[in-house]
Image (cartoon, rainbow, N blue to C red):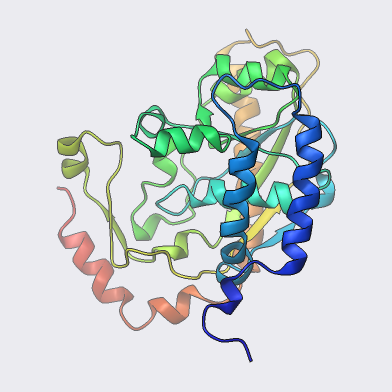
Length: 296
């Protein structure tokens, strides 16, 4: 029988697999000079530390890995879970559970990139500031990028609004048009339940000059099982240019948003039971208290 904690040690199978993956990636990146300080060795060390949590704590399942081809994508996902753990889990999925493995370059908000230590670590492990020039540069160099068109609004949700998509911004789609790069829709199920009782204090966030400030009943994410769904790629219309009208852009972005919404509905119907077992005894009381203390 496993002792407490043994399930969070890196398995021999995963260590061998990660060694093989990074041998491939080191060959791929041997002549690449990254402007943001991307460090493949740090990625490998970090992955070996957190994969046990990916496997045993969050018990991640990946559906639709066969939809990923050996090409560049703009991977487009719902944003969920109060902290950017969804980005970490998606990135791991594209390393471990997708062939060929790849390092997704996640786009982050400016405030995140400017955080001491965290900003540098994020850049060294593949994340970059999400502006169009950076995205275009990476795609030109054969990379796939990970975007969350809901932005910080996606993770700034109170408990009653979990899994309700915020409207998508459109900048990512103009990049896709400019570089003729297909969209790969992704949705994450289970990350909202990591922090099941959340209230966002807009006043306090403004006072501290941060875009969002979740107040949660638990400081460490709960072991909610995570399902990652990868949809079929959405091709870029050949006739549409990146200077197209806002109306044309919005129509296509709305199609992507609806695709991910349908994936969410499917995923929620098939999610593994966890949230209800945590929520039922105290949810009514906690949610009522959060609402009563909400911003007026």
